[in-house]
Structures are given as structure tokens and as C-alpha cells.
Image (cartoon, rainbow, N blue to C red; front, side, top):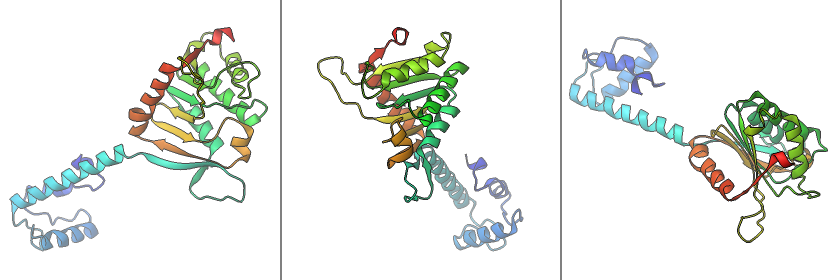
Length: 256
């Protein structure tokens, strides 16, 4: 890790073995480094190492710090604000909900989780998302898990028409890649309200927020969400979703 770090310590390590680190490989950086090392008592102002044991200890500490930094970068999730906003709400460094939804679906290479209770098929934005989802299934490489509210005729969630629409766009050959689940029922004794909205791509990236697949959520309402990337998605979010569908009712697409 040390030898390939952005700090470029490889030249320093190589020169440490000779006992002199003054050979300029970057004059500005070398001058600053020599100044600091000489003040720390690790070399003189000409770059001659005065205590090789202490200098090797210094290098070991730097190496450990770089490893710790790299680990923290990997473990710390990267988060970006996602929103549907009216024109008067101008938030810098944010992304629009519809753009994030499209990008997550389009860029998936292995898996997609779509967790949402509400749909509206009378909106072009929503239909575009459904068509993009069907396109991914037709490529034959991405498995899709839809976690929905109860798919019953006439329900206000429009789950059943949405499932029928997706199914109509996917060939029988690739339909096995699509699994749907009803999460409005705990399988034991009571009805449960399901209100979560998420899209999870390749166990690496996830939208978590308030936006449904509806006209209002994608165009009119003020919706806030987060786009999260990092090890959190695979280690915490996906296992939680798996536990949810273990308790959910499978929706038999072939009977729709």
C-alpha cells in the first residue's frame, strides 16, 4: 500500500537505504520534506540520515497511517443528496431523483432491487423507468427483485398494472430473472404498512429516500433522498432486504 500510495513515498524509501534522501525528484516537495525531516531530527539539512533506526520507524508509522486512511476510505460510505424540487428550491451539489433512478437502473451489471409501494402508469417518466427496467431484463445479465405492496385489482398503489406492464415487455426466456414480492403482509396474522422507497444496484450503490414511482414524486413534490455508495450497502442494507423478502409473499408473475 505504501509503495503505491498517492503520497509517492517509493523514492523516499529507496533513498533511505543509501543513507541520503537529498537527490531531487521533485525540487519543491524535496525541499519541504528535507526541512521537516531535519527539524524532526531524522536527517541533516543536506539529506543525510542521522539515525537509520529512527528513520525506519518513521517509515513504518507512515505506512500504517496510509493503510488506516485507505481502510477508512473504503469503509466510509459516499453520500450525495438526491431531490425532486420546485424551481425555487435551488440546492447545490445535489442530483434530481429521476436522473438517479435512471442511472442506477441503466448502469446495473448484476443485480437490482426496486423497493417501492406506489406507481403511476399515466406518467411518461414512470413509463420510461419501467421500459428501462424491462430493457435490463432483456439483456439477460441482471436479476431484478421487486419489493412491492399487495398486487390486487383496483388498489390505489397500481402494483398489479405495473407488474403486468413489466411482464409484457420481457420475453419468457428472461422472465426468470424477475422476482416480485408482496411486503404488505407478514405471513402470520396482520397487515403491515409498507412505505419504503429504495433502489439498490449491484450491492454497491443505493438510493434511499421518499420518492415513489409517480408523477408527483418525480416532478412535483419536494422529495429528499440519499445516494449511498460503499461497503455499507453490501454489508448492512442488502442483508436487511433479504430478510424482508424471506418474510414476504412471492408474487407469481406467470398468473398475472
